[in-house]
Every structure is written in structure tokens, then in C-alpha cells.
Image (cartoon, rainbow, N blue to C red; front, side, top):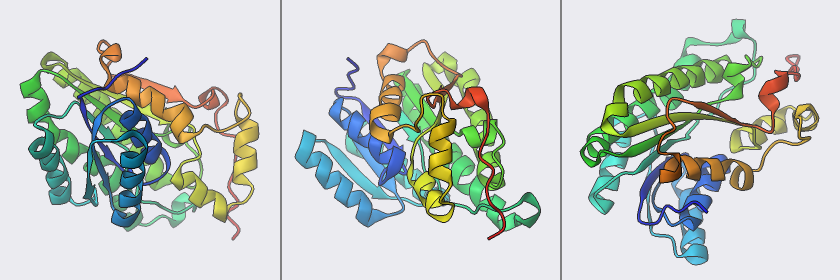
Length: 263
């Protein structure tokens, strides 16, 4: 059984979806947490649930990861509170639109990069000195099958997540001598972003479930979070620079859903 007892983890985008699932699992596995999200109210609700359910030791930090100073403050809070950082989970995403490539704007693509790429980059840079001094650390970046399989309609998301995957591999190569590992996870789950999109495209959920070799998209807490907890633990100490497809086999068949652009 994975144990994270006495370890310290930062989780961005922790208030809902996959981030909340990761927070619940890592708290159950004994980690001390810094939970960050732009939605401070929802974040506090989750924090109280975790304190009540598993007596979780945690602090919350209202953080817009597209703001470099807020990201740096988040990491500083972790070191000030706990004196160490064992795992950094970059999960936050700020939403986008489903629209054709020719209709995308510079602002939309830049927003995707600021949240998914630069927000993670700033957090990694800020956590590096502490992890280097410890000679130990695990970075887990949530990437996406959207980028790997080139899903239609989500260019800002696809591009940012693939850039993050390249950044993850580079960090793994450069920081391995310091005992710092970096891995990417491409989940196939009914995340907060997926639920939001499914509300606008009602055909998406049924089609996504049917296209999955296991017949369903994953549950954030039961299917995705255990893998993140494993990557944070010493059980994965020799694993770095990898992309893990935690998706029920979705990456095998590629993309079968074509969005309806007519609305």
C-alpha cells in the first residue's frame, strides 16, 4: 500500500474534479498538503471535508496559476509551513472553448499557455531549490490525451498540454542528478473540465464512454488519484521522464468523438 506519511505535496486546481480526487487520495495516504485553486470558496469546502474525514494536515492557498507572483507565494507557503516539498502536482486548468482552429484567438491560446504551461513552469522553478537541497522530489504534471491524439476544437488546451509534456521530459533529464523526478500523466476521466464541456455538448459523455476500451471514462479519485499518489511515493523512485496514460486504454484507439461546431 502506498504511503506518503510525513511527505508534503502541493496540488494546483485542487478544488474540484481530478485535483480534488488527488487531494482526497493523498490525504488518505498520509501526505501533508498545500491545496491551491482560484476558487477559494470551493477549496475551503474540500479542506473541511478532508480535515473531518481523515484528519488531514493541510493549508489552502487561493491561487491563480496564470499569475507568477501568486504561484511563487503558493510554493513559499509550502516551505514556510512544512519546511520541505516532496511532490508538486500541476493540475490546474482555466477553461477554454470548443471551436474551430480558424476561429481561435491569440488571447485564448495565450490563456491556455499561461495556465497550463507557464503556471506549471513557475511552480517547478520555485520548488526546485527546496527539492534540490533535499536531494529528492517528485513533479507530476497533468497533461492530456487531447494533445496526444489531436482532439478537434480544443487547440488552446492541446497545445498547452503538449508543451507541458515536453517541459516535463526536459526537467526529468536536467534534474535527475539532483534526485528530482518528473512525470506526465494523461488521464481519461470525468474531470471538472470534461463535465463543463459535456453540458455544452450533450453527446460527448455517452460517446466518450462508448469509445473507451473499458467502456467508461475514469473516476478522478478511484482511477486517477492512486497513480498520482504512487508517483509521489518512494515506490516510484526510479521512474522519471515518462508519460503515463491513465485512461482505460483510450489512447489505443485515438479520437472517435467529433464535436458539433454548428451551434
